[in-house]
Image (tube, rainbow, N blue to C red; front, side, top):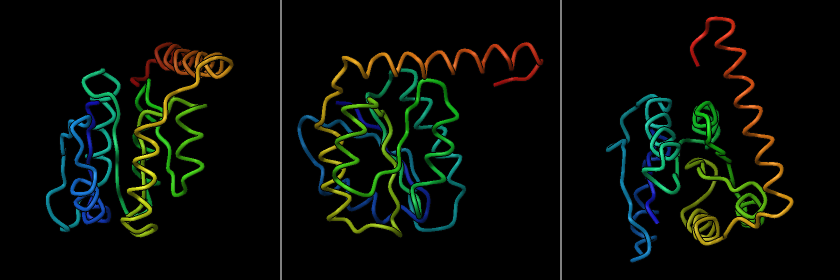
Length: 158
């Protein structure tokens, strides 16, 4: 599995710890920054990962900031992305099984490395269930397409 990962300064330390803990021959990691705890703007990092996951270059993405929330907001602006902020094991499993989430966001100021590792392992190993859940994903795709059409009609770029 090819995984894109990035953080801002608030998630940098958690990202560093996850990369150490989640070494596995089944995971191919690409780190898109940031490289220090110096203040940076999270949208810059979320956009890069979301675009690369949406393009199919990467299977999944993990984004880390102080809360996980800012990264999630930005990533979900990219069509085809289903980013979720998760801070518990049940939600990590449910969002993969039911929503086929493709980007996981977490907060370095919200959870510790042990919890983040558990959540990431569950999220990375849980398959999408399909079935009735596929119908719901198709509705999400239709919403994305409709929003794109409305934006084009209004002369807006999306």
